[in-house]
Length: 113
Length: 115
Image (tube, each protein chain N blue to C red):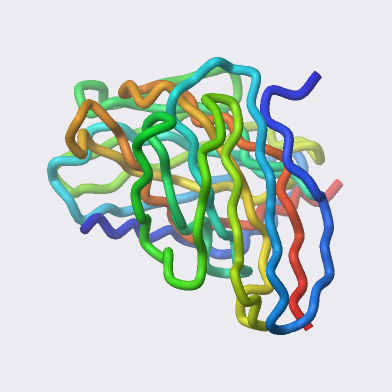
C-alpha cells in the first residue's frame, strides 16, 4: 500500500463551492505538508503541521485552510473555490530531520470552473 | 526567504548521452539539497540528496555536486535512458527553528530522453 494517499485524485468544481482534499499517511511521521503545483512554478508550500496541535501558514495560504484530525490525517479546504485555484495539489510527510525524505502523495488534480 | 532558481526548464537529450540540470540558491545558511523526480501522474520522489559538508555524491548513473561558495548545485545523469524522462526538481533547506527543515523548490526541469 502507498505510504501517502490522497482523495479525491481528480475533482471538478464550480466557483464559490467549498471543497476538501484529504490526505492520509502510514509512515508514522509527525510533520505533514500541503503543496500546490502549477506549470512552470514548481511546488509551493500552502500549509504545514508539526503535529496535531501545531499548524503553520506557508508561502501561499490565502484562500485555504487546513485541519489536522490525527497524526496520520491532514486535510486542505478551499472555503470558496475560485478558478485560479485550479492546480495539482500534493500532500507530503517527513520526520522533519535534516536529510530525511519528504514522502509525497500521488496528488489531487483540482479544476475550478 | 530562500530563493531557488533552476535551469533549464526543458532539456532534450539522445539516449545514452548525459544530462545536467543546474540550480542556484540565495540563502547561505541552507545546508541540505535534495533532488526529486516526478513521473507523469505521480508525486515527486527523492532520487538523491547532498548536505553542505559534502562536495559530491554519486549513486549509480546519478550524481550531484555542490559549490557552497558560488551557492549552486547540479544534477548529473549519465547514460540516459528513456525511463529517465520526467520532471526534475531541486530544493534547498535549512533549519528553520524547532528542529524543522522547510524545503524551497526550484521550478522544475522537464527532461526528455529521445530513443
